[in-house]
Image (cartoon, rainbow, N blue to C red; front, top):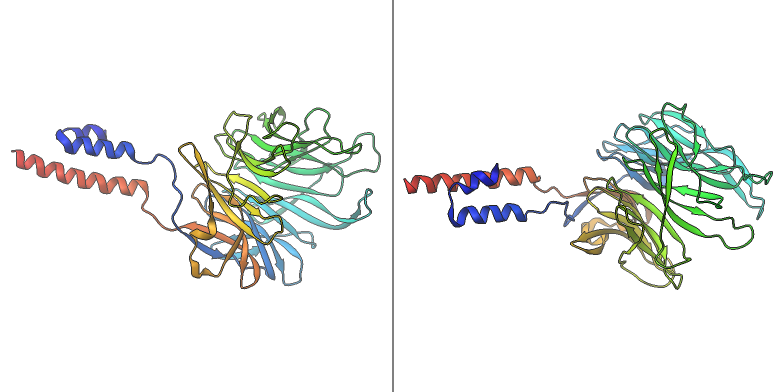
Amino acid sequence: MLRTLLSVGGGAFSLAAVTFFQSMPAHAFVPDRYDITDLGTLGGESSLAYGLNETGDVVGVSEGADGVNRAFVWSDGSMKTLPDLGFGGVAYDINNSGDITGALSTGIDYVRPWDGRSSSVDNVALWQDGQQLVNLGNLGGLPRGEGRAIAEDGWIVGTASAPLPDVPGEDIWQRAFVSVPGSNSVLNDAGTFPGDIRSFIFDLNTAKQAPGFSVSDNRGGPAATDAGLWQFNSDGSIQSITPLEALAPDQTSVALGINDAGEVVGRSATADGQNVTVYWGARETSPELLPVLTEDPGTYVRAWQINNQSLAVGELRNATDTERFATLWAKNADEWKNIDLQTLIPTESGWDLSGALSINDAGQIVGYGVVDNQQRAFLLTPEAVPEPSAVTAVIVTVCLGLFIRRSATDD
C-alpha cells in the first residue's frame, strides 16, 4: 500500500522513497548504549540475576540479611524474597504470567559416596504468580533438582536426581526432566542418549524443543558429554533427542540456549581440547564457531541464551580468572561479532560487568557484575530509540507533504 502511494508522483522522488523503505533493517539492531540498573540485594552483600521475562521482571539469587542465599523476584524497582522452606533457594526463570521456577534448599545434607563430601539436597521449585510455592521435589533421588526454564503455558524443564538402576544407594545421577501442567506437576524423566546415564536441560522454546546434553557412564573411565536437542510431544512425552555435533570428533559439546526459530547456542571443545562458544542454526546439527574477546588457553566460555532477534549473551573468563567479560553476540549478514557489554554502558557507572546470563526480545539483559566492591545483579536496558512504527510514520508524513507540494506545483 505504501509503495503504491509513493509511486503515484513518479520520478526520482518515488524511486528513492521505495529504495529507502526496502533498505530498512528487518531485524533488531545492537543498541549503541544501555542504561544499567543495580537490582540491589535482600539485605546481604551480593546478588546475581539469572532470568527475566518480556516485561522486565527479573529473578535470581541474593544473600539475605541472615547470610542465607534466597531466591528473589525484582519488579517495578524493588526486590522481593520468594517463599522457601527456611533454608534458601534460587530462581532461574520467569514467564510473562509471573510464574517462576528454580531450586529449593531442603536443609538436608547428603554425603557423596565417591568422595565423602557433603552436598545440600535441593528440590525443584515452582512459584505460581511469583508468590505461591509448590515444592516439585525430585525424581526420587539425591542430591539436586532445579527448574531451569518455564514456558508461557507452565511447562517446566530442568534437571533432577534419580536413583541409578541396579546400583542401590547411589542416588547421584542427574536426569533431564519435563513437567507439564495438568499432570499434577509430576517431574517426568526426559531420558538420555542410548547407553548414557545422565542428562541436563537448560531452556525451552514454543515448539517444545529443549537444548541440553547427555553424559555417558563414567564409572569405568572418562565420561563423554554430547549436546542434544530434545523434542517433546504435546503431552510431554519424548518425540526425539537429536545429537548436536561438536567442533571436532570425540570432543565435548553442550547446548544451553534456544530461541523460537530453533537456533541454539552453547559450547564445544576443539580438537586440542580448548573450550569455545558455538552456534547451531535452526534444523542444523553442525556447529559454527562464535568469536570471543579473549582466546587464552583455558578460557571459561559460555553462550547462555539467544533471543528471537538472534542476539546471544554469555560470559567469558580468562584462564587465571583475572578477567571476566559480560558479552553479546550479534550476526551481521553472515558474520558473528562478539561485543564487550562493558563498552556499551556509561563509563562513569562504576560497574565492572562479569557475566550476561539472559536476554529478552526487547533486548534487555540480566547478569552480574561488581560495583562498590560487591557482586550485584544488574539489568541492562537499551537506551530509548524511536519505535520502527514511529519512524515509519514520520517518513510517511514527510513524503506525503512533499508529494502534495509537488502535485500542487504541477497543477
